[in-house]
Amino acid sequence: MPESNETPTLLSALGGVLKRQILAVQDYSLLAFQSVANLFTPPQYWSDTLEQMDFIGVGSLPIVVLSGFFIGAVLVLQTSAQFERFGETALTGEAVALALVRELGPTITAIVVAGRNASGMASELGSMVVTEQVDAMRALGTDPIRKLMTPRVVATVFVLPLLVGIADFVGLIGGLLAAELTLHLDATQFWNQAVNSLEFGDLAQGFAKPIFFAFIVSTIGCYQGLRVSGGTQGVGRATTSAVVLSIVLVIASDAFLSRLLLYVFQK
Image (tube, rainbow, N blue to C red; front, side):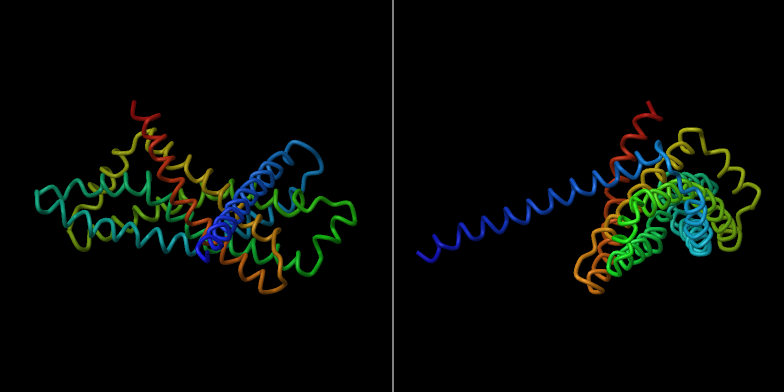
């Protein structure tokens, strides 16, 4: 008898969890769609968008440059160890360039930006929800999604590909220095091989991914912030959830985007 009583309770609990997750996905999808649809109707808050571009793009530049430089150096050290076994250390530049532009540049930059800005969006908007500033905006006739979310989404989608380009360039510089200091490769040879190995399809893959990653990071951060409940503790939970979900979804979507883009540009 105890087992028969526990089974419906367990099933109902699982059903409740599944229902909440489905409703959360639906709520997020509607919010993300509305943030994009706001671009096609007035009013437009371009000053807020420029302010967010400065905060997200310029503010993230130091950590993007540092991470890109050392990623390029580490790539050279790791790949050269394998190429030395076959006497093909000259191919290091080509391997590093392809890995950076296609995969590591977009993904690592998106993860770094998610750690800095998804948390910032969630905490800032969550604090506005807790202090009832969002309710005050609605009372004054201002759409908080149009005013708060759309500028952040547009700014992130615009600046993340630029940050990826900077990370790729700095990563190649870091790889060049590592190759010259540790492998004693000629800098000109390394740079020429790295640049000449890149084709249009490689660049298209490297700069198409950040657009999707930026949309994921910005919409997740704003969604978690605007859906805060439970006071200041809820702000902390929303900030953590925004970072974790953004990073997980960036990595997961990267697998699907890589397969799709490889199919498109390598037919």
